[in-house]
Image (cartoon, rainbow, N blue to C red; front, side):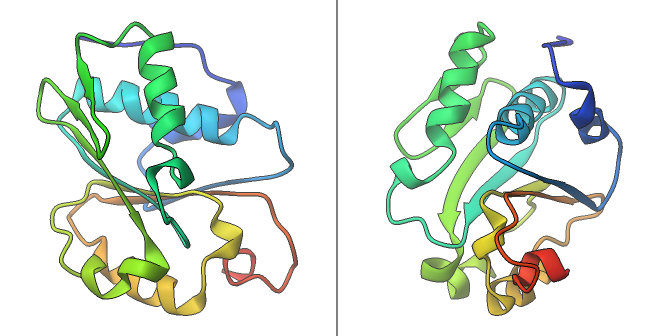
Length: 160
C-alpha cells in the first residue's frame, strides 16, 4: 500500500535518506504533525521499528502517542495500525515504542534494531542523553529525527 497524505512542503526532506533530520522553529509550524504523518506513511510502506522519545516522559500523555493516534484516525489507518496504551503496532510489523531519555538512559542501550528515533521537544535533551542515544541508534540506514522549538542558543541540541 502506498500512502500519500498531505504534507507541508517544508517537511518533504523527511522522505529523503539522511542520518539526521532536524526541524526547528516556533510553535504551530507543523513540525510534529509532519513528523507523525511521515512516520505513519513510511511505516505502512515498510516494516519499521520507531522509537519516539524526549528528555522527560513520565507518562504516555507526555509523549507523541496522542498525536500519532490522532493521525492514524485522521488518515483512515485504523485497519492498518493497532493503537494500544503502550505502543502503536502496524499490521506489517511496524512498531512505535515510547521512552523518556532521562528516566531510561541506561535501559536505552538495550533498544535493538531501531530504524528511526524521533526526538521530540529536543531543546531539553541533555548532553548525556545525546551521548548515549546517538551510538544506540546504530542499525544500518537508521535515522535520528529531531524536532524542537529553540529556547536558548546554548541548548545542547541547538549547539549540535
